[in-house]
Amino acid sequence: MLAAIDGPADVRALPPERLPDLAAEIRDFLVTQVSRTGGHLGPNLGVVELTIALHRVFRSPDDRLLWDTGHQAYVHKLLTGRRDFSRLRSRGGLSGYPSQEESRHDVIENSHASTALSYADGLAKAYRLRGETDRSVVAVIGDGALTGGMAWEALNNIALIKDFPLVIVVNDNGRSYARTRGGLADHLTALRTSQRYERVLEWGKEGLERTPVVGRPLYTALHGVKKGLKDLVAPQCLFEDLGLKYVGPVDGHDVGAVEAALRHAKGFGSPVIVHCITEKGRGHRPAEEHEADRFHAVDAAAALAKPRAESWTSVFSEEVVKVGAERPDVVAITAAMLRPVGLAAFAEAYPDRIFDVGIAEQHAVTSAAGLALGGTHPVVAVYATFLNRAFDQVLLDVALHRCGVTFVLDRAGATGSDGPSHNGMWDLSLLQVVPGLRIAVPRDGARLRRLLREAVAVDDAPTVVRFPKGVVAADREAVAVEHGLDVLARPEGDDADVLIVSVGPMAEVCLAAAGLLDRAGLRATVVDPCWVKPVPDGLPALARRHRLVVTVEDNGRVGGVGTAVAQALEDASVHVPVRQVGLAQKFFAHGTRGEVLEESGLTADDVARAARTAWDGLGAPRHTPHGQHTELS
Image (cartoon, rainbow, N blue to C red; front, side, top):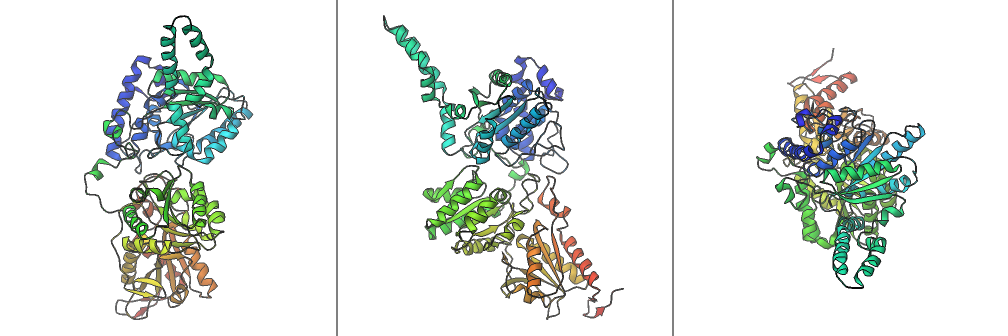
């Protein structure tokens, strides 16, 4: 059936009795294709019927469908004519999230949670101002995303809209990555089990009507307090008290029931919440039985067939458990990503010292400040790209109060397959402006273990440890320590031309570039500062002995480590030119980490070429292989 669906009109044309077959075919397609390529399988298996119903009731793209988060939009892609999943999340293939470049049916590239309701609020207001009252705006938000404060800021404002058809679909599967936590989750659990009300009422009717004389009056009285009883068993009044019409809970795997609820909501003419109960991983038994995350994201089948190499995340996971054993004051915080950031083992070892705050990075950071003020040392582990959301809290809630909080930033630098929003290429620039904050960037597993311990030893300022996604680099010991910097390579004698400042995992690239420069007649010293903020005091003195400094980092070039090094040299009156090599300041299409680095000129060849070009611009001579100088033409 999928082969005949080129767009939503084809979905609307199907007779209702064919829809279960379509849903089954979609699930088979997803299991087969996503298992080959890797991607977000569990969330999409859970929204098959819901997505079919959405495209039967609403007419995309005139009606606007927004997904929060966008990783649950694979079925939407299929029903809007995108059936080639062979290169999902790879260069030249489909994005793992909605993408304006892919289809006019995609409105936002929404891969950071809790934002769709704000987009919907703005769209609804814009269409009302333009007089386009025949268009609906629909936001599909996972219950995990409702743990983010921004979603509630949006709901507070959406409730003011009284004359526009805005529909909010709560896709409630009780999980984000893992089980959704918090007071809101408890509330939705109560709503999810509200069918108890109907069972109680049915039992009362059957039992009391069999009771002579008093049975019927008692049942009538019971039915008369329906509102009070339903509020007791299913307190949907939370949404209604905000001024939002509530429909549900609805079985999200019954296309007919979801269609009916959506049509009712569409015709209401003002904001309505449709609460759909779904099951993450639905229809694929291995996912349904996977308690940890219901196959939230799966690796490619080819990768699963190979032995798993040690990852940066696993090194951190092991070391933070050891630190916790030695330091009972160390606690850990995660924003709904306990397993992805490597804190599951810590949680198992120290269940009273782990805090999962839901998708609420801002709260996580300020709560960490409170924990620090209370005498603990919090370790806040998040993806590097998600710390962007809590910059103000890092600046004014943590750093201003000189709180000893350690931020561990996973997936830093180029991450690749999840696309532009997930590349962790902003943190080294944003955090440079935070007074007192210190940043460590390990080049390998041994340095990660050491730097993590050094970071948690700081109790009067925030510290950051950042590392990339993927397999951890082989340990690379320094050949010497000079001016407080690890020297990874240097030419014989003191006659060095270029100082390469390698930032963390770029060490192997920099060492290879140094070898290329040597063959081109330029002698290079390679150093790794390990702590890049503040710039080590000894770096200007070391730079003074060279003719050129080249900084190499997997962060955006604007305002990163290279900029800080150049400023430090200027402040020390060391007038050695600095050539900064980093990620281009742009949004990169999804692809591998290697592809993103190559696109930005972060290969060994590129670094060596940048150094040669900068050297030639100085008009300085190069060495011959025999140690003589040759003048440049």
